[in-house]
Image (cartoon, rainbow, N blue to C red):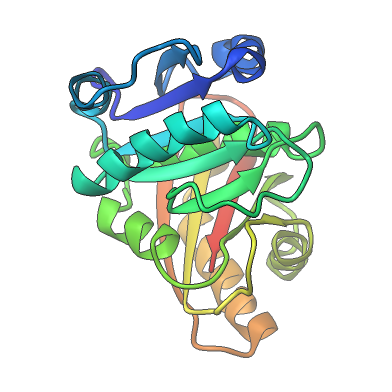
Length: 241
């Protein structure tokens, strides 16, 4: 992937330190920006920040008023530029202020690895070189729709029962504030080329089970990315509202 249409920015010293710790796990699929609270965040700066970007993740501490003001300025401009904007709040306290992001997740030690995986898998799933890629409009429909968004990530052996995997994806998840609407789902899969030819059938079985578990007509879109590895494993990110 030559062009990086995903950007991760950190606002404030704590978030900058947080990003420095995880940057190496994201650098293949994202570009980065650090913004100190002393930075003059004017329109020209934000326009440059968003140039060529389709998906923006912002790390911040919502307990700091100055950081919140910078975050709101960036998210407001992101809406104008039609950039999907996801907030990653490192403050564990409830955030009662609307910062203008499309969806906000609390980032902590329990969901850090899953969130890193989610960012990477989403970025690669949108790449047109991916075998079956997902369109940005599907991602926006999920994150910009009503209600909460939940996500889970699992790495499994391909002999795992699809019903068991579906149950794991449904039960071991993190979500933003609000209620889930059960309207849209994205199943983003990465698999080794050594896995064999039945992986798409397997994915359809997982999707059917997910719909049965919810007893709903949730619309599930999937992507499939083959990687040059010898392991017969699959990593799946499941996002739904």
